[in-house]
Length: 374
Image (cartoon, rainbow, N blue to C red; front, side, top):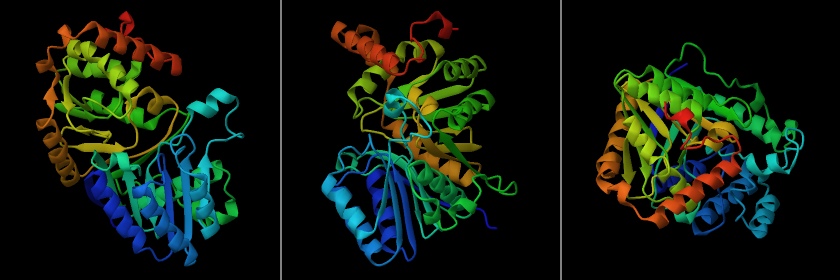
């Protein structure tokens, strides 16, 4: 078995174009799991193409998160199903969770597309016209990792209520890569189970020799991550954190601001992207990198279904590093913002955002707690 091949896309538009071309050339099947997929001018071209492929007799299965894709119209849902697209919503999960709170907070945040069981896409890219000009990281992959993506998709299809007999053998594939292919590892998280992505982020901080580059659009870490971050800095490891200066979610923006003082105390180099940056991942020295759907925030670490890939391949790490370092060069260092002199209104917004986050995620850490100041 040949090792997997990769193509990196660093903008939402580039990833959209690549995925559209792959779907257009599909001959057998299209399987897509997505957090946000709405029928605006960008989404409709994908939906139209998927309906066309389904009408031609292809196996087209689509999983979308009920909360994230709330803007998907009933008219389009009806059209998709009528054309033969097997559409499943991730929301009820009666057999897995009990109570209204679990139904609200648990989501599939994955962004995975598999075409003809041979070509896979994984990363941070959703489909919504608001995101057209965003910076993001998405991968096209081939090789055995696609088999792992197929099994992951099959398991989610069943969770959402899909019939097992409709899977056509997808469940036979193993989620783990063969031991002989050590260059890639699929990192799948399944809601309330222990987060493998969080474990990899912590591994990056604890095992790095010289430098760790973290990038995420939203930032609200938990205590375990913060402790690992502190230990990395104590060992002299350089840690860069790239986040957007302003995100599409206002409360998340102000919540991230609330952590800046502690990051400065730790010696983390916070860089603020002037464009909306939606990529999520970590680069460790020149050795390995992980990208996917997991943000550096409490929900991704504890509640969401996520999909990431960890890749040990110097050529891949080098290419990804060039992209992320370019983003850092175009960003504004936190130290230049004279943050301590920001106004009281700004501070109140940060306080409110942090409180709301802790109310929503009941076990989230308090940024002013002495327990996390080490």
